[in-house]
Length: 319
Picture 1 (cartoon, rainbow, N blue to C red):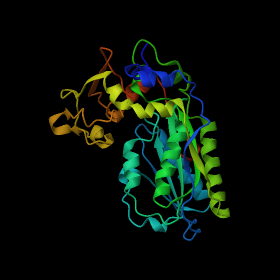
Picture 2: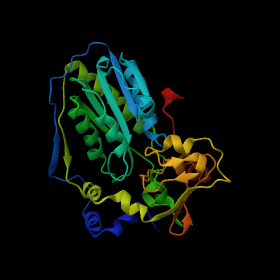
Picture 3: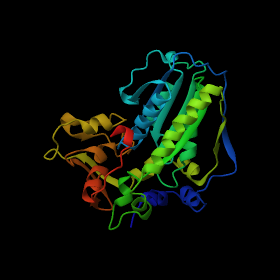
Picture 4: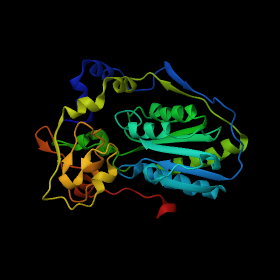
C-alpha cells in the first residue's frame, strides 16, 4: 500500500532521512528568542488567526479565542485569508495557527507573516495541528515564532495538537494508512483540554511578563524539508484537473487554493503553480477535482470522511 512516505523514495537523501528515528534531535539548528522588550498589556485585545484547509486548525483557533475571552480578553478571531491587516499595535497578544504541510509550516503562512508590519514588542504565540505523530510539528511551530520574532514580536508560547491526517495519499490504495486510521478519533476531549490549558498559560505569560525561548532541532523530518518534498510528491500525483461535467461552480476550490492555481471559468489547474496542499480535492462538495495516484483516482478528505461515516468532535463551547 502506498502512503504519505512514498514520495521519499524519489530521492536518496530523503530515504536516508527516513531511516533515522523521527524523534526530536539533540542538535539545535535555530534559536528563537526575544529581540526587543515585551510591550505591557494595555488594551486587553487579543488576535487569534489561523490558516485552515479542512477545519482542524480553525476549531482549535476558535476554541482558543473563546477561552481567552473567559480570561478577560476582547478577541478578534479569523482565518488569516479573511483578515485585513490594519493597526497591529492595538493587540496585546497575537496568536497564529497553522497545519503542518510536508513537515513544515506552509509557504502561504510564511509569506503572510513576512508581510506583517513591525509588531513593536507585541507578545506572540503559535500553535500547529498535524496528522502524525511524526510531523516535525515542534519545528513547524518554532518556524512561525521565528518569523514573528523577526517582526519584533516577543515569543510567549507554542503548542502542537495532533489530529487525523487529511493527506489523501494516506488512504490511497487498498487500505488506509494504519497511523491515519488509528488517529481517526482525534481531536478528542483531551485535545481540546490542552487548547484550554494553552489559553490559560498564555494569559499567565502576559500577566507576569514572561517571554520564552524556543529552538528548532535537527530531526529526520526536518531534513526532509531540505529536499523539496512537494516536488517529489508531484511526481506521484497525475492528471490534476477539474471535471467540468461534475463541477457546480461553487468556487470552493478557488477559495481554498493558496497558490491561485485554479481558473474555474476555464476549469484549468496550473499544476506548476500548485503547491499540492490538496485543499481543492479535500473540500470540493461535488467531487469534481480529479487527481490520480498509482493509476487510481484519489479520494478527498470530505468524501473519505463521509464514506467511512467519520465525524470530528466539536469543542463544547462551540456547539
